[in-house]
Length: 419
Image (cartoon, rainbow, N blue to C red):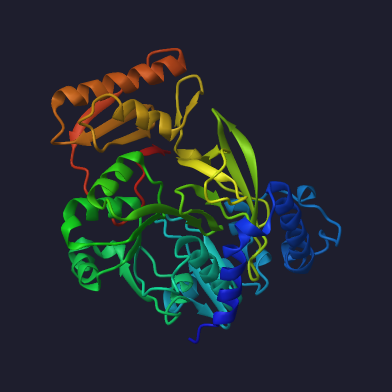
């Protein structure tokens, strides 16, 4: 595959110039609106789901909100190639290609993976965007980029042979006994991996790695992991790449702020209570698949303070977690994952990891076996007290010491509600 450097470099240059192109947020929003309207008429109107529903003057707010269930119920209606879900899944099992189209699925292993269809232009636009945001000086120095994820994708394939970069994709699901040695031998300057893997590296091999940049992705970056990773790799800059099948959603800037990728997508923020919002995405950079007013089930806490990097893009203070992992208390009150996490971790400074699972009527806390019994009791009491106060009645908790092994076969969710 010959990489088209022009498409990637044009996107790279445009995004690099974003802070200096606009005098402020209002100027940026006018530019964004113009790009969005052009995309609605020239691209979104071409797919069956919106054919005849979008005219040259149709506004985004006039169109319905969609979600994953809507997309997957009629996948072919939302991509210009007309590829249905079964065709995409079959192609993923082969070589992730259907004619000129690249296909793939999310890294999740829940059995309900999201699917995507990409054109070559989509892939190279993505490459230019990720370079501009995560590796803005890639052209000055040779970068050895290690990507540790459960599934290889056509997105990262686009980086092979591009400029001075070397890319090594390591299969997370194979386990560290298979990829840790090759990772160390590769001597990466950049590591992109779920935060649980970055933490594992911080605990298992900090003296054998010397990265300049660490980016977490595919899972929520928990403060517990962040502090451990920073302590082990004090010279490396730690950031987040918030990406899903819905697109490249946010990337940490050089000043340390996570910014929404609003130079490629319009983001509505629905109020979700407790100071949190739910993103509704419209990606106006996509060519092959239309993601239009797509409601995610993630919960975000925004940060509206000015950023030292000068970007007009809105900042995200925290990706709190999945809305469907909120605990449901007696009486119907919902408790977000960050509230649960804080109650457990703040109970005792010796707590460095945990799991909280709601299954049926029970709420179960697990701490590592080496945590003292007193810390386990404090975590149980603290979480029970916090949830009881929110429910207005007693909420019993069952706490146990357990093995909390590194999970490579599924995403780590420290707070999880199971049906």
